[in-house]
Amino acid sequence: MASPCRKRILFLAEGATMAHFVRPLALAQTLDPGQYEVLFYAPARYSRFLRQKPFEVGELPTMPGEQLLANIARGKPMFPPAVLRDYVKQDAELLRRLRPDLVIGDLRLSLPISGRLEHVPVALMMNAYWSPYAKHYAILPEIPLTRVIPPRFLGWLYRLSEPFAYAAHVGEMNRVRRQFGIAPLPPDLRLMYTDGEYVLYPDIPEFIPTTGMPGNHVFVGTCEWRAPVQLPVWWDEMVADRRPKVFVSLGSSGPMRALPAVLQALAGLPVAVVLSTSGREVPPGASPAWTAELLPFTETASVAAAVVSHGGSGGLYPALAAGTPVLGIPSNADQHLSTAFLEDSGAGLGVRVEEASQDRLRRALERLLSEPQFSSSAKQWAAVSARYDSGQMFRAFLSSVFGEG
Image (tube, rainbow, N blue to C red; front, side, top):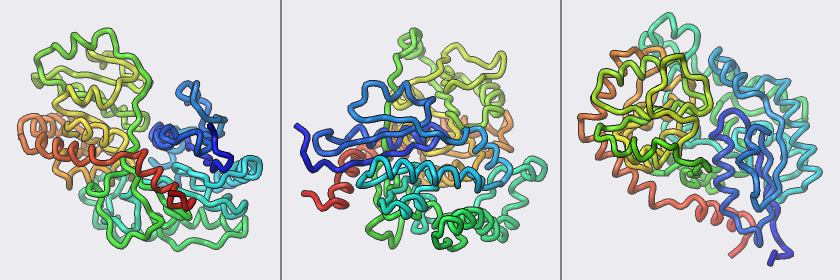
């Protein structure tokens, strides 16, 4: 029986990559409908995953993910000012109509503006490696220049220029904030990404340590979500294959142009390759025998000796939950930061996409498959991850917000 005092929680899932959809969905699914009234708005392309959910769902128009990734590749802000202005208006209309007690957005950078305009508290979901309270890495992401000059020769220049790059990105946001009468932010990208009344980190606190974190910044675990997909007809035959398996999944935002080099590197190793395409087009002749559009990530990683991903948290955490080491091939800034913490953890290696040659990838894979410390570290992180229940952590957060229990 529903409580007459149910709190109304609105989730807004940005359409940049699938990770920004599945993380809030993983949290929404843990809430008791008798205690919370859940409203979940996401891009239409994810509607197939929202059928028969015990909460209200709606469509959230968003900028195409391909455009966001293209902006990042050119070193531009993720969302142009015109897009942010439209987002603010869309958000404000939703908040006025739905009147939630709390709105939670994953990469919905317009929410700090629209939430203040409509006097609705905002919780932003953002990985902790973007937190002002986490260890800071100045890593030059892939830009046109790094495809010409090796990134290792440009690192010192980027460390000098990073504050100016941060200021330029925040400056675009401040233009929009001023137009809506909201005070500008300091020129620090990390402060822009965490400018909510609350910040939810979909991470393991030991994996991304923080210092001096305030009480309104909260870890909620890895927000594991299992895609409702059936195992392919070849699953049992693949599992029975005695060769070590390498699970390759570049997700919805990984660099597909690196896939041929990955598969060529694996072709020279005594392994069986399992490939998830994530619905993306695979280069002709590049599909191994064990190929599917979507596979249950953690279950597939659990039968593999190594995972190859884009290095972002969406492919990293499910692999570690399975106790399997990871080779990350990062391209954008988010993936580079995640891969840096992966290497710190001892559970994997990273190879930049610009440097992802067949030889370099093969050497990295040989290390992951032959040096036992990687597998040992991954299994240790699996044990750490198992201690955290995202649903329990999220419900505790809501209880603290609303003064319950």
